[in-house]
Length: 308
Image (cartoon, rainbow, N blue to C red; front, side, top):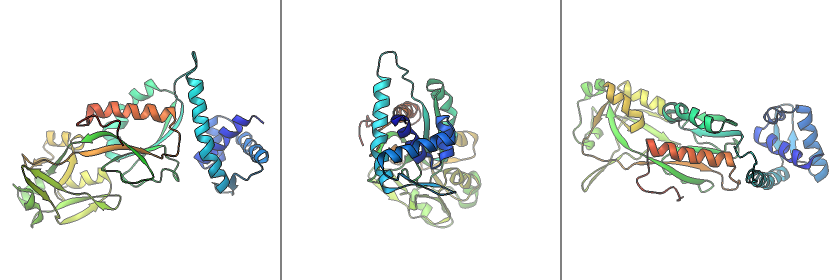
């Protein structure tokens, strides 16, 4: 048994949740990867995986072993990549989860540039605003707007999204154009409410010393960015949008900006990842590229990239 090959086989099975999918990522047969894991278990005299006809689950011993060797293997990759003449391009599957509008409008259109630079990285991308279990779902990182408070994650701020309040002409024709944010709290006005992982987004606006936090009525609360935008375009209420989502619709006249002179605090945009994993080279280059991308689309007001 090649001990290193067996370790890689085990790591891939844990991350893929399947011998078949793991074998595909390593370009070997299912029988070979099964044999490698069995030989590793025999050598360690420990059961690492529970196998059923439908799925593979890691045992408690297997989980502890995985957490140790995944860092060891990543460090080994770095040592080899740092040798003179060694192939230095990162490779392998990178599992990320990003908000659906961000994927549609910014990330996917720019992805050819990243893949031209790193052709051996393969993406498995979730496009959602749901809360992701990075460990359970085997996700390398998530990109999220808003403050990330989960203490089990490392959050790195990569951008700040400028926000504005908008409404469709059909809505303004029916309800009138509000001149002060507080008017949105009184009928016939309403908002489309966006829910962040079950929490309401704090609708706060500033002008000089005045601050208005709204508790406006709504006919729709929603947790998907694309559907949220569609609701606003359909005239279901006023909505808060980052510039990258509103720009083309304002230009076409489909949305009208409200409350000139009022300011909304920028929304932080962060990448989060588990702290107990050694950061792989493919994840490091992805984060660096996202920082480059956000410097063009949503730059930080000040240099916070070395922060949380």
